[in-house]
Length: 318
Image (cartoon, rainbow, N blue to C red; front, side, top):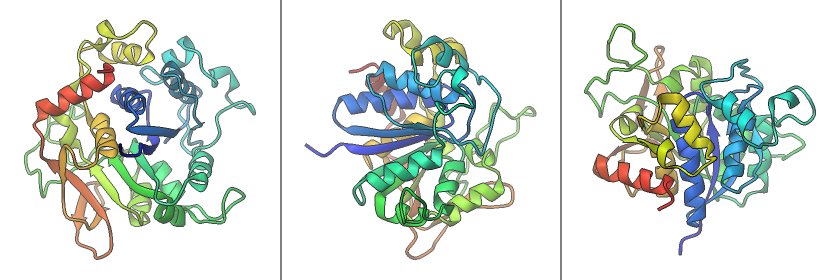
């Protein structure tokens, strides 16, 4: 049997419910012995984010390091982060915010987890903005490790899978984004746009390891978790997240597809040729050839319905 894929999960959980779905699926894959969860970090910080993450982890019987990115503060309960933090047991209730009991910074958790890992053994999964990636890539030696962030990326990470981007070169059809008030096709993707140009470029330009993007197009046509709140176990915080977000109507599976690719690489999607991912001034992602750079993005292989069934079965514990 193959060794479990060691995962660090960096997320913007608390708003869209597919982050919670991806974390649930990750835990189920850990139960199957296909993955090992090392840490979960947030790409921003709020008084409820760490508690939301920890509540889901504890429900699945795992207590792992949790970090949040204090460089990007949001004084918001999110769509469901506040509810999960308040309603389920966790180590980081809102009242510890600003005390020495609060969750550590994301960069501390990333560097400590990578420093302790064997070379080439960790897969980083990112389903939010690129702030955590940029912080790690630009970090220098510290009390945790004499390695720079780029040295950690090169030595410790096997690969990074990022949910993000649009690639019109391979996906020419327009996709209409719900956030577009005038009903025009979107050109940028939210995780890249939400990073800001400086952060997005800092992440891509300094990411020296293998980087695979599961773009907006990949998860758009795969709607999962329909009616999950009605069939989930009692006390399941992920069920509450989906109930609050859209009353169990199901959701596009952007983040779950990234997680599935991270743990079962190459099974459901093909890869574009390796090169360099870059962003233009409008925060639209592009690919260009660059020798020695291992950036790529996913292309279709498996049927959408097959992938949908796989994701739903995994979250249901089948």
